[in-house]
Image (tube, rainbow over all chains, first blue to last red; front, side, top):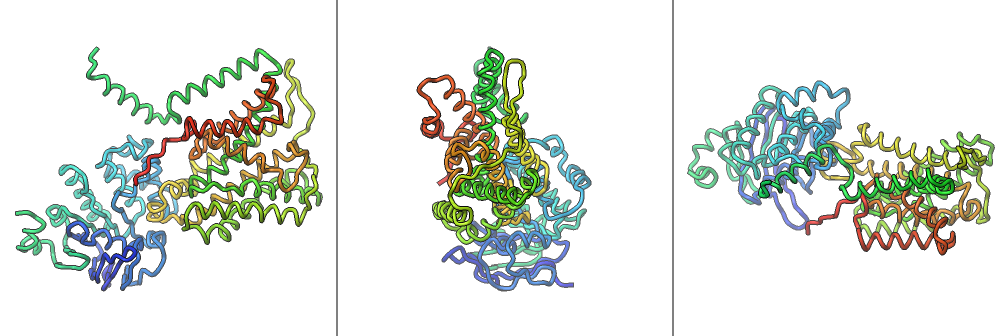
Length: 235
Length: 341
C-alpha cells in the first residue's frame, strides 16, 4: 500500500523568496506525523504546498496519485482538510454555519455528524448560534478542528494548533486530535513549535531548518536526540 | 452601588445583546423605531401623509432592491458596479421585447429574470474574470466601460426613442377610509420586499447561499473548505442582475422619463447609491432600509417642504449621500472599517 501522502523534493516560493528547498516526507495512513522547526523554517509552507495555497513544484502524491494543479478547493474535494494558521474561522458566521461550511464538499444530511461533533466538543451545542468571532482562542481552535472533522477528511493538515493558547488548552486540543486519529481513523500532519507535546502525540517527526528536512524519524528517537533536545525541547 | 464593577456589567450586557443577534447598534435601532412611529402616527393623522408614505415606500423598495444588488457585488469584491443601472435597463428592454412579441406579463417577467441571471453570470465570466485579480480601480473602470457598451448595444437594437412600458398591476386606485392608494404602489412594495425576503432565505438557509457568504467574507478560507470562490462571484453577479431586473421592471411603468430609453436607469442608480451608502455599503439589510427611508423621505419632502420640488429631488438625494459620507461614512448598519496595514 502506498503512503497516504508523499512529498518528494518539493520546492515552494512566495514571489522571489524561496521558502522550501526540496522537502521530502511521507505520511502513512492512520499515522500522526509532526513537522517541527523554528519560525520561518517552512512548516506552514509545507502544509500550504499540499493544499496548493503557495506556488510549489516537485512531486506531491496523495493516496498514490499526483495532487496535480487544481486549486485548494479541489484539494479539499480529494479528502484533505487544512486548518491553516489563523484557523480559517469565519468569525462573522455562527458556530453552526462554520460547521455546515466544513461539510460543504459532502452530500447528504449532517445531523449525525453534528451529533458526533458535539460528543467531542460538548460546548458546541450550547453555542450553536453564537458568532464564531466571539469565542475564546481555545474554543476557536476546537471549532476549527470540528469544522475539519465535518469534512470527513482522510488527511488533516493542522498548522500550529498550540499557537497563543494556554498549556492546559493545548493539552486538551492534542487529546482530541489523538482521539480523532484513533477513533475516526483520520491521518494527521501537524506542524508545531511546541515540540514536547507534538512528539508525545506523533509517531513520526520531521525537523525543518530553513526550508529543508534536517532530521527525521520516529518520535521516540527524536526525543532522545541530543540536538533536538537542546534546540526544541529545552532540557 | 459598586462603581468598580460597573464596566464588567456593561460589558456583559453588550455580549448578551450580541448573542441575541441584535442587527444594529442601539442608537440606530432607536432612530429607526422613532422613524416608524413617526410614519405610523403621521399616516393615522393625515390622509395625504399616508398616501405619500405608501408611494414613498414603493419608490424606496425599488431603490432598495437596486441598492441591494450593488451591495451584493460590493461585499464580494469591494467593487461598485457602475453598470448595474445599465444592466437593469437592458433587461427591461428584453422584457419589453418579450411583451411586444405577445408574451403575457408574468411570463415575460420571469423569463426576463432568468435571462438576467444567466446574463449576469456571463458578464462576470467574460468581462470581469480577466481583470478579477487586478486592482479594484481596474475593475471599477471596466464596469464604467460596460455602461457605455450596454447602452450602445441597447440603442443599436431598440433605438433611443421613449417606449411605454405596461404595469403589472392595475393603475386603478383603492380606497381605505379616506386614503387613496394606488394598487401599483402596493404591488411594487410587495414585489420588492418579496424579492428581498427570498434572497435572504437563500443566503440564510441554503448551502450555496452560505458558501457565497463565506466566499465574500474570507475567500482564502472558503477555498480551503472546497468552495469554488470564483464561481460564487459569478453567481453573485447573476443574482445582482436579477435584483436589478426586478427594479427596472418595477420602475419602467412610472419612470420619470415617461417611458423606457437607454438612459432611463441612470437617475435611479444614483438613488440606489445614496440608499446603499445611507444603509452602510457593506450591509444588505442597510441597503433595503436605506432605500425605503430615502424613498419616503424624498416623497414627504417634496410634499411638505415648499422649495423641494420634483426637479430638486435628485439634488436632495445627492446632498444626503454627501452628508452621510461626511458624518457617518459607515452608514446606518455598517461596521466601522478597521484595516490592518
